[in-house]
Length: 147
Length: 428
Image (cartoon, rainbow over all chains, first blue to last red; front, side):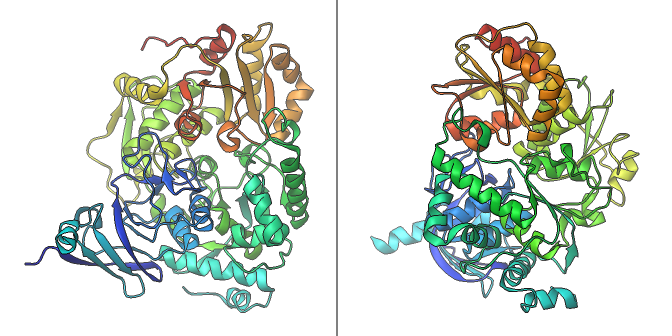
């Protein structure tokens, strides 16, 4: 079995197609007070990705937590040009739904497998939200192809 | 999503382009959620203000306040003319206190722009309550009322304490709600989602607002965004305690609804709180050990005992808390190296002026500010490195936002620290 290319199917939250390097966290993300909207960097003190930017990345995470400023904080990442390329998440809330809509990055949820288990930071991920399809190229395979 | 004829007419442009954009956003948002329809609402808590230099810049480049509202309250790149609001709408806290801008390090240009913006939003019919606690200044929905509220600490109060129904809305969805009188019928608007998921048994006395803050902070970490049902509370908490409790739980997790058995309206019994769901066999237990560990986690950034700043009033202090603070400070003097700022709603500050609390607090060297808080404004006294707080929520946010060290404790502990200039950890 070829394990270097994987696919997931999910439900469309925000339509569109995008691809990029995966940034994966098992921690929920706080919007307002949890990210710096000007740089797309996570700033929450005890977050696993503290200091890491999600700009242009396919952000894979459980979902949103914290302030109702979530949507505005992510809306501003779009305004500043540092939004994620796409969002894949597993827990639906109003914060993440509205946040994804106004970030306007393709987004999916309700997957047939666990994206948090199957996708690792550094994998290349193509998100076709219109078709509900995620195509994953594992980082190991990518480095082999480029060497 | 299924739309009523009236909703379809709004989407088709009957009520103009702003209402059309609003309905379009509600549809995109509702589909993202997987909602089947919208529900009527006549009660909105919203942030529409423009109180940052960025917003000023955006307004000047894109077409003034209507451009700010179009983009950030309706998610519309096209600038549309904004009509008066259709629903009762009150404003959340601001980015600064316009009456004390200088103290907060806000320049005159920003204040002038804010005032222009506020004239625009009050002109639309949005009430300038400017508080994170609308339920303290005249917006108290009744049980079962469908609302569209922002501000996580207000949302959890609305659902849990008042028994009204709201999800945690954001700036764009409340913007759309105030123009259409609609919000997606999803989440906490539906009976089945309001039932308990976790059972928590409290094994220790929970008395002060700090005690309630610690319990809430621990509970949020345990249940994340689920619905906890709490038993073992020995004395009925007041508004301020539940205000701190919910604010903590919504910061450490994403709690939007909880039940206190025998206290909150949808939990006259453990069975009622869980409804059709099964009551778990074993509760999660909160005792002295959990309390101590939570306090240690909250105080993770605190290293130096010498403090520069005491911030109270997150969420905005109740009138009762202002009275308590005045009693703690009466006849005392805040240390020369320490600033004490307490934040409350503007309406509450008027009452403090009338009742003499303002004079007592100012005589001790403290300052009452309104409309904002340090986390929202990123404003602290010049040179602040170490902060003392009686709010778990503010302790959660302030070190992340400003890189300061923070100590969390009771209001009395904060007042002692303010007068001594040093933080003293209490045993246990």
